[in-house]
Length: 557
Image (cartoon, rainbow, N blue to C red):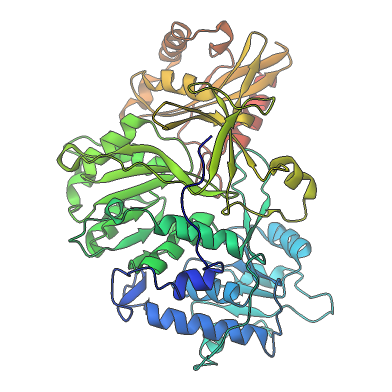
């Protein structure tokens, strides 16, 4: 078991950890731009402005006309915007719980969450107001839920709506903030839903403060060289725990960071590369697997690669799914930047590095990590496994979530009586303490002659020429009476035409010759696709793929 190593301190609320932490030396002056709009950098907020506006909003929410109380829920359904930091930290400074919904959520999902959490206020954006307007948003007393709109714009047509800026400028001189208990719920965050139906994770003030503190203690050399003025680019969505963590850490450390419309920018690699050049980005937070795979596959004469100046870029962070080491290394070499793939869970925070790659010109060893948690790998009998043996990752720390909103059954199932969170992720660990992820327990493929994880099969497939992405899922076949592995393959752009029936058979034989179990052969078939289904989190949606595979097998597609 890996024991907790990091010391605790007295900053047990989010506001204290971010704005009253004298143990941190910020990278830029408090009056320099800190949060900036990636598409319009003139739209920005300094640390001093952010602190003042957060305090003002927190006080305003506790007074008329809102009269919010500690523990009340405030629903967020907004696009990414610089004002999101004011809204997010202001709501939690007031002692309320920020319930985060993706801005692309359908009205039915918003309605379901409203009924479940009973929010006392809603944070929206002009582009999400139409959805919010369609929700039955009356409080228990029959009065409409007040809506605070970020992003400026014209007056809204909803009578109970007002601009957020009206309230964070209402109390210019704030001497004291509402008292907030560290164990009060601060966030309700939806899980990704890539392996099962989404759940609302409850994170306390103390838990989020501990997560910020853990990231704050990371060596700054992993973010940018000492002699470089940092500039971060946050490629995540405000409703995701990654956005909250990255923006919190950048705020605490005083790292200027650019935010932008995730849903518009993230699919467009050309826009990402152009913005890195224009804004002289040093640290890119969360380059997705699809973009990384595309960059790794670029040829030296690729126009897109040569078109932009990436010389400012020092470090890239990624996460959410396992990325092959050769892809990490190829991307690091192409962009001449260090890449780190982090393992994190909404329920437990960021824990350790899964993958690391550095171009030969910048090669440096990855510092041994100090994890403020007890971590162990256990078998199905909940017994610790020896070094090198696979086991489920269990985590116990002050960063752990409180549980799942409205689901005491799931909370009891996933958080045991000893305080460990059962991640459902299967790992091995070597003598040096390096963890290797094999997959999720839910992804395991169960056959008559053994159980195995898709990753080993996916790695074998990726050895075959012309494959850009490969995901393998197990789908139950009524005909065979067991699960069969079925592969979904995205070919390289110039190799799509090569994957005819003969090439698919060659791939099957390639796999069959290399697997230890007969049942690991791709008897569920291979399907060539242009792209893989992606969940709202940006991860490959294995849950959807399993359903698709089952239907296709049953229909002999």
